[in-house]
Image 1 (cartoon, rainbow, N blue to C red):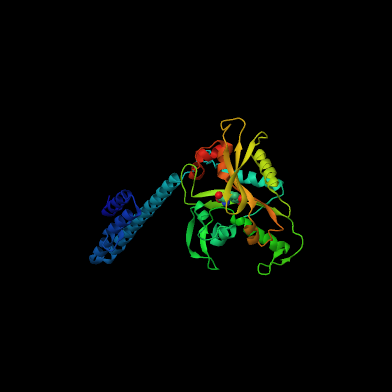
Image 2 (image 1 turned 135 degrees about the horizontal axis):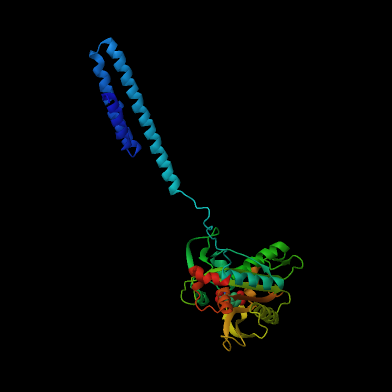
Amino acid sequence: MNDLDTLVESARQRFATAHTPAELENAKAQFVGKSGRLTELMKGMAQLSPEDKRTRGAAINAAKQAVEAALAQRRQALADAELEQHLKAEALDVTLPGRQHGRGGLHPVTLTMERIEGIFGSMGFDVADGPEIETDWFSFTSLNNPPNHPARSMQDTFYIDGTSADGLPLNLRPHTSPMQVRYAHAHIRKYGNGFDPRSGQLYGGPMPDIRVIAPGRTYRVDSDATHSPMFHQCEGLWLGENVSFKDLKVVFTAFCKTFFENDDLVLRFRPSFFPFTEPSAEIDIQFPSGPLAGRWLEVSGSGQVHPNVVRNMGLDPECYIGFAFGMGPDRLTMLRYGVNDLRLFFDGDIRFLSQFQ
Ligand code: DAH
């Protein structure tokens, strides 16, 4: 082997020990770089005769080409290895079973809400939705609960900084009752009925009864096994020219029996107080059998809509009369499914929630 063959061979070996492109480029510099060994050999040809220069030059060129070929080969090998590694790392086993997506389902309280809407819907009630950030006027004043009235403290209200566009204090509604007044306003506007609050003069023609439920989220400063700062209520209102407490009893009894799928359920209307109803009653139910048998369980507040509230709706209390109720869908859900801690509904634990699918 002459010196050039040796050089080519050592270049090959050197390249073979380079395991990254950077290492390979370093190794290359030792042979073909500015001060590489081949470059040095070229420089050394200066003293040779023209004849020797030609043969030596050709031999060095051939060696250079051999080194470059070895270099290109090694580059390709490194690139192939890298690709191979990538492919291995990203390997996809198409025979693996697919990732399962849970089917999901509705939250138990949502199931209750839909059930309530279905039952009242079948009795001709509209379903309405309203704001959770409410003004002081709708949450309290319109409901015959004036500023500084002690009944306001029945609800530990969350107040909000700032005021509404018309300068009224804001709160997170502590009950769905404001929807009674909001819905009545919308209904009256729709049918062009009502009276002028200044002159008291009536206008408009006959108007269909106001018959609505308003389910939704409500908020109070309250938290334990049976209270959550966010909870649900469903308001109900039936107002017309001839709607009585008897209608409340009939409607609510039909609702409870249908909701709990139990015709032997017993209801009790227990006298109570709410500023927006007169008379007022708590509605209790009793199951004839089962784990809760024999206990009176409170499910709703109710009563005959107070004349002041009817007036705030924009209607003449001499002409319009009716009932309202406000029940707790969370509690109804607990009773229906036998759940004893309200907080389970809001923890989002899939082991609990999946039992309702
Ligand atoms: N708003 C009452 C509460 O949150 C519940 C209630 C009671 C609503 C009587 C009514 C009603 O509509 O007539 O405690």
